[in-house]
Length: 86
Image 1 (cartoon, rainbow, N blue to C red):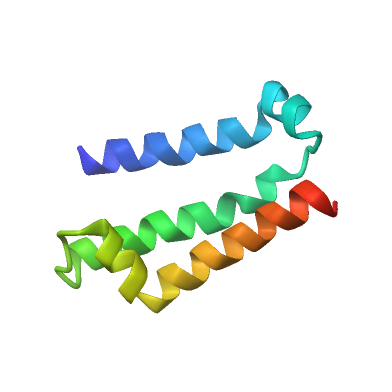
Image 2: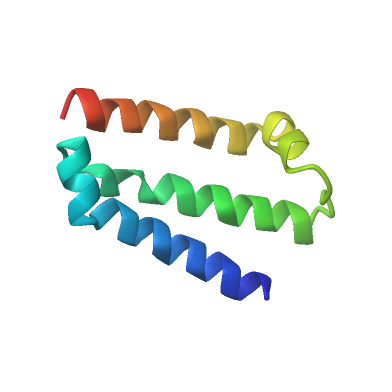
């Protein structure tokens, strides 16, 4: 089930970034640039749950895992860049 949900989340985020409604609302067609950060973040979280057995609190993982934290920060910076500069 986790594989199906993961694939659905990735596909839905991709569809969201390419959506004409979102493009019109945010006045940018470049939101797709954020897709790699979301995909990496989801796969890193799955790796930590399954291989490192660090399941439990997603918030705790997000704050304590440096790669996920860096991905979130880079995603935020990219969104700001896309929305206000590009």
